[in-house]
Image (cartoon, rainbow, N blue to C red):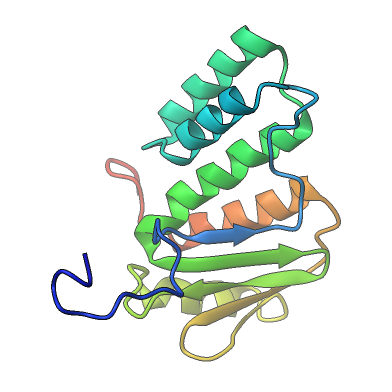
Length: 167
């Protein structure tokens, strides 16, 4: 597209332009759960292209029906994909979390109300800090997948606009 319109292509950017999420946890479909490579790749594509949380839930139910209960790495994959669905409309470019905390990187024009970021920092100044104009740092113990997912979920919820019909 870029070449056709006379621009230089941005080769450093991922093709999907969605939020990149790195929680340093296993988030995959193990071949021990699903040995067929083609089926695994098809499911990865379906999970990645889910439009909303409802589609993700339907896929989880389908996988349980077809292949058995989901092991933790697949549950993590669904959670990371769900977080990405929440992060994308907020203008979050990247989320990194590890055992000692992490950061959120925003696009140049995020869709987050700056007052929500200020409120978050003021409510817990030892936990949240701004690191430049586009980074929100999180400091805290996040020893496992569950705590990292919960922390990211809480941050994204705090930054999200209120749901319609709710205050």
